[in-house]
Image (cartoon, rainbow, N blue to C red):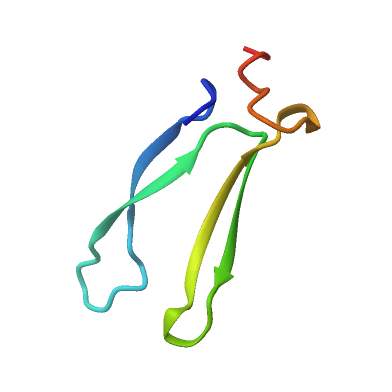
Length: 71
């Protein structure tokens, strides 16, 4: 990440959507910076359709990674 406050935390959660008596655990990522924003957009169409993830650090409403300066 370009910002010092932008860090990810990995946690283990039980997959409740799995079938059967024993539920597997999966890794889940949680982003710790409260001012960041992640958007999912769909690009393409048909079989070439893909999800594109855009991460924007919006600390203070300014453009660019300004949350580093609030440390």
